[in-house]
Structure formats: structure tokens, C-alpha cells
Length: 210
Ligand code: HEM
Image 1 (cartoon, rainbow, N blue to C red):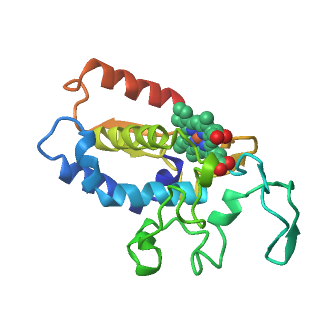
Image 2 (cartoon, rainbow, N blue to C red):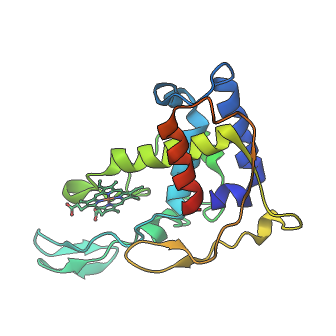
């Protein structure tokens, strides 16, 4: 959400695509989210720059002595994988590694990049045998809450605050979180009251989270 508040162009584009797809509906339907390809690009780009678990759980080298980028990795060595640094690597994401630019996934060089552990340049859920077993649930939670907020509400920053002023500083830990509070002004656009009670509850939980 913070990334979208800092990038109004992306927020408005995604909102427009969602509202067009669900123009005849009173709520977002999960089954049809797959066709909103821009949503998946935005989430990939968000997880590339801000993986919630920047350092994967420690892994141990199980094979005999290996060489990685000129470094010896002996059998039994504990290896820390930095998903945060990999997501910003200028060789893999050359040209615009630090830029929040979901459209990159439309380009041939990045269009096939997946975050489910097949591409080592994008590993917010890890990879291999110890890949996150909660990946599908995690992604569903991110997608559904984000699209529900974008579909039902117009979101603006407090009066007088510029998009560039949204502070993206992260607090370090096993998982990362925003250091500063994010303030968002929400204006109802598509009535929530038509949605089922449990959906309203989800939206309220999300506001508290923000
Ligand atoms: C967006 C949400 C999530 C992200 C980004 C995420 C990310 C990760 C990462 C990076 C790892 C370490 C993988 C590795 O070292 O190779 C991991 C492990 C794990 N995750 Fe998640 N996770 C998410 C949601 C969840 C959820 C919803 C659950 C449970 C319902 C879950 C359960 C686990 C467990 C049990 C492990 C340890 C797996 C093992 O050591 O074998 N995660 N997660």
C-alpha cells in the first residue's frame, strides 16, 4: 500500500484496471483476478523491492566444497541468502533496479520471471526444498486485501503531503515492517455495504493494519 501511495501513476492504473474488470459487480471476485495481469506485475515488483523476509532462513551447504562467485563454500557451511539484495541486483535488474516499475514484467527479458522459486533473481518466498509452504496463502492475502481496498475506495495522502514524502524506511528483523506510520485518506467509491458482512470485517482489519 505504501508503495502505491508513493507511486500514484501505478495506483491509478491498477485501480482503473480493477474497476473496469469488475464494472458490473459490487465486489471483487477472486476467480477473475487472474485476468488482471497488471495486479500480478505490481505484486511481483513490490515483493522484489520489499521482500518481507529479506534474509531467508539459514541454509546449510549439503554438497562437497563448492565455488560460488569465486568464494569457497565448504560442506556443512551455513549460508545466508539475501533476497533483498538479490531483488535489487543491478546485473539481474539492470537499468532500473531501484525503480518501482511493474511494467518491466511486460518486457521480454523479465516477462517470464516468476516468484515461485524457479528464478533465482526473484525469491521473496525462497526456493528449493525449504521454499515457503504458505506461499499461496500469503499471496492470496496480499492480493485480496489490496484489490478490495483499491476497488472500493479512492486513496489519497493527507492534504499537503507529496507522494515522494511517503517514507519507505524499513525496520530490520526476521521480517521487515514499515518504520513510520502510513496515513491514508480513504474515500468510499463503490459501496461496501452491498458486500457480505465478513468482507466488511476483512476491510476493517486491513485499515487497522495500515
Ligand atoms: C507474503 C507472505 C509470505 C512471505 C513473503 C513468506 C516468505 C518466506 C520465506 C522467504 C521463507 C524462507 C524460505 C527459504 O529459506 O528458502 C519462508 C518460510 C516459511 N514460511 Fe513463509 N512467507 C509468507 C507467508 C507465509 C504463510 C501465510 C505461512 C503459513 C501459513 C508461511 C509459513 C512458512 C513456513 C512454515 C516456513 C518454513 C519452511 C521450512 O523451513 O521448511 N509463510 N517464508
